[in-house]
Length: 276
Image (tube, rainbow, N blue to C red; front, side, top):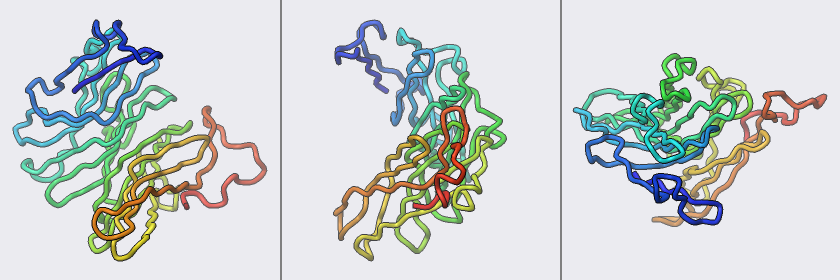
């Protein structure tokens, strides 16, 4: 993986790795690595998330998070060697493909929140994980730091993630039932790692633009959470072949301030939670 750090002027920052950039092999085996997210933690350390083969005997893909010191060295206080690994490893060892799609740092406690897919030959689950700032799995989240769900038996994948003031996780992506085309999907978990039943009654909801049936492949690829507003964006198929247009939706959620306090309004800010 390649990491580049610039100053506010856009110039390479020589305090990082001596020249402003570095390459790093998280598997230490010269295998394929993919980066999907980068962030600074509260101590100014660079945190990078992605997917790597890791040289497993089964050849499966795993999620990985790497943290560097402000000087550009692998941070030995982060999971011993600077690299934390997350493996769902569903079904048979020969078909385990766990792909990370998004990463966020929880502003409440510095936990690292990850979203993507846990796949095998017949399972295509949406997946989430939360790591402690030390790089260890956060076992207060779903018992082992990981959560995967088929969302009622459909193929699904998460591509964006955020955290609100109560530590609840918001994620979006797409869901493809066995006999139908893909729709945007949005979900929310509790801070403890369960689907939040106060969001759309079961913790998740879908939105299909269905612009030009029967070609209705709608994939959410990005999202943002701001002042309790959960907006998702992506690609909406509008014709045969590769004809797509941008799609944007906003879901109603209760307004949560950074300290976790609900609004002081006499009534709800939003009448229905988890609906477009």
